[in-house]
Amino acid sequence: MAKYLLLKHYRGAPTAPNDVPMDRWTPDEVSAHLGFMDDLADRLQASGELVDAQALAPEGTWVRYDGPGRPAVTDGPFAETKDLVAGWMAIDVDTHERALEVAAELSSAPGAGGEPIHEWLELRPFLTAPPTITE
Amino acid sequence: MGTDDHRVIADEALLRSLVPRVTGILVRRGADVAAAEDAVQDALVEATRTWPTDPPQDPMGWLVTVAWRRFLDATRSETSWRRREERVADEPAPVPPAGADDTLQLYFFCAHPSLTPSSAVALTLRAVGGLTTRQVAEAYLVPEATMAQRISRPKRTIAGARLDQPGDVARVLRVLYLVFNEGHSGDVDLAAEAIRLTRQLLAAVDPAHDAHPEVAGLLALMLLHHARRGARTTADGALVPLAEQDRGRWDTTLVAEGVAVLQEALARDRFGPMQAQAAIAALHADAPSVEETDWVQVVEWYDELLRLGDTPVVRLNRAVAVGEADGPRAGLAALADVDASVPRHAAVEAHLRERDGDLGAAARLYAEAARAASSTAERDHLVRQAARLNAR
Image (cartoon, rainbow over all chains, first blue to last red; front, top):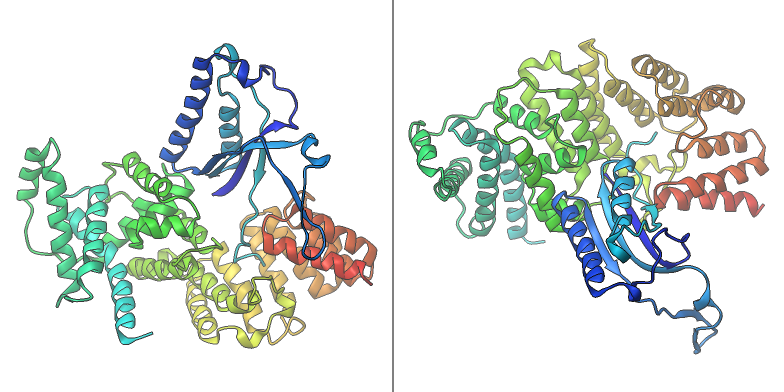
């Protein structure tokens, strides 16, 4: 009964064994990959473990406060920093072991040649409200 | 809030208190538990729709009638309707009074050993607590569709499980404890709900009260912690440590009830960890201030808890109590026996180091503890502690 975030990265994670850019896959391989992701989300919903799954566009904009009356938008050097989040899946599972199992399954999504991409995923526990009984 | 609102709320409380008994009656008339539970949920929805304008004379009878009709409708629509209907037709029509046994069996069913903790919790809240799937989903911050599966899957897992098996009270208590300890909630107060369900369970085991003093132990533990809830956090949700809590805001009525329930359980001389934890909570609730707390006795109860089951968490909490009873040095010595990987270890050491005057180490440990905190309120509290010492 703990929530975890599974983070997919465009960049920033170690290189996966089957690391072929998605635009070099065949259309069928792309469909198989997307179908796998949908199917996994469906199965996690059916097992009562899915919280949310979202993909993010690769183009992000870095924004920061730049003094009164001046909304600052900068592409600057930041957009080229090494980490870029591609999307997430949030799960609510009974054990940490189960979270690892789901992450491994997500990482096994098929890619080029129909082979698993073995993608590195980041697994992060949610911070929660504190339990009532602590003393 | 107008009179009508009070009326609706009173109805909802009444409705939910009837749920386990109505489900029990359907089961004894021949429905399996999963089907009965579905039918009762349908009847509840119907009741919330019609009762405000057309309240029944006999709420219990109304619910049984409507739920039974729903069960028959559902049964008829299945392929095996004929066989089922024949069986159903053999059942006696009048409403038998539902006994405490039926309610108890329903608790056992929802805490069945083949269910995962999250399934057991969800099923208990719905089948025993009478909450809707939406309410349970909101309380656990997951989508309703996900929660619907979390409730229907276990029902398939244990379909056909009979209600007359001997159940495991300890397992039920674990489920209720998990419900109580869930911090966040939607429009349902899970802590209050856990207390309600534990009260109901205590009433159900009453004939065999002597056999289950831990039910009373858990109820006492919940009441004593719940009594302090208002003082545990500030209006904006920040954690207030025990030492700084405004004890005037502790709910003395709940404390008195918790202590009474505990004393009755202890008098039965069938000791268990729930009662020991409740005893510790009672000593806190009883003290006008941290300094006036009977820390020596708190340590003794922790020793008792250790005898019942030696866990790192109990050792950690005992070290805190030793620190108060015999000073920070003694607390640190006790802490030396605790595995450093236990959650909150750094926070406890930070507190003891600060009291011992080693402020540099304390600041470093508070910051370390903040990084390892599993809850936002705890992290924020620990960051403030580190910041306070660093700003000297």
